[in-house]
Structure formats: structure tokens, C-alpha cells
Length: 213
Ligand SMILES: [Fe+2]
Image (cartoon, rainbow, N blue to C red; front, side, top):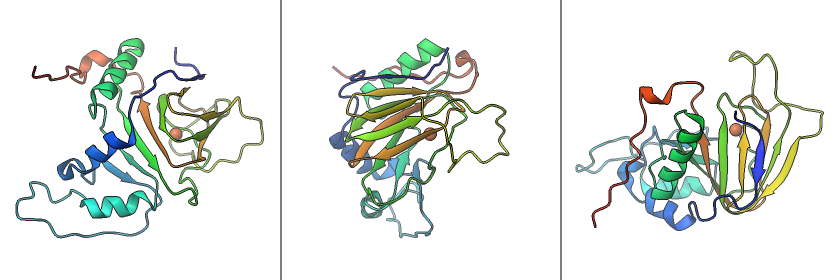
């Protein structure tokens, strides 16, 4: 049973700015399918080197520029580091569902969060990695449907959870529970969305970690 909860210092040192720095410098990893640019209204074009194996990889200078302007998350990152891979496996084993890792970065405190108060269609475990983020969670919305607006909601009731997440703090937010994340400092967090009810045995991510010595 996936329930709302919050545990301080549940997973310290899951991921940090240095590890993110390494990932975002691997140009072939930064594909337009993996780099999710929120609040972005512009289109960008670039010229690729003749050695590039994939023309849809965002150049590092553009990634650098965007990181300070908008909220970005990187999807399909559940094998980004050994720690993230292992934590994803822990959640998969506990709930019997498939898990991804979304790495969220917000370095611009002036911009409004693109989703505002919203709910998701998947259960989520979120680990704060760097900085401080205020999270509020409200009671479950009944009768949800994909046709209804699930972002920028106005809710009059008091939140059931209102916490300032510091590095290592972890929150479990069930699907259909409205929530709002407000960055109080530049922040880095990893969000682990769970597949709805798909049996994990159908197509489980290979969680073996390659070591060479
Ligand atoms: Fe969310």
C-alpha cells in the first residue's frame, strides 16, 4: 500500500551537484527525449559535429544556459548512478512495480513552477538531494480523469503535509494527491515515479550494476 509519508534523512548522499555535472557533460546522454524543459516557449536549433551519432542531443552550452533559466528534469535516469539504481530496485521490490528516476533541477527561484498545485497519475517517491524545497500535499482528489485539468489547482483546505525538505529527506506522494513544490534555494532532487499496476515481471529493468574489479 502506497501511503503519504515523510521521513527526514531517509537517504543521505543519494545524488549531488558533482554527479549531475558529470552526467550533463556526456553530450550523447542529453537527448531531447530525456531532457524535459519546463516553462519553455522557444525552439532551439543547433549544428551537429560530423561525428555526432545522434543529432537530437542538446549541446552543453545550451544545457548550461537553460539550467539557470527554467525548471529541467531528466527522465529515464534510473541507472544514472549506482545509488539511484539501487534505490529504484528497493522501491521496485517493495511495491512490485516498475520505477523510473526523474532528476529535477531548479536553479532560478524567480520563475513560477510550471505545474503549480497539481496531482500526478503515478505514485512518487521524492528524495531531496541538494538545497531546500517546501512540499505541500493535500487530500486525495476523487473522481479523477485524464480529461480534467490536474495542474495549477486552487485548493482552499489546509495541506495534510507541509515540510521543508533538506538533503536526504524523502517524501511519498500517492497518485491523485495534489502537491506543490516550491524551491527555497537552488535545488536538486530525484523523483521516482512508479508504474500504475503493471506487473513488474513483465519487463523489469535490469538492475545489475557492472563492476570491473
Ligand atoms: Fe508532481
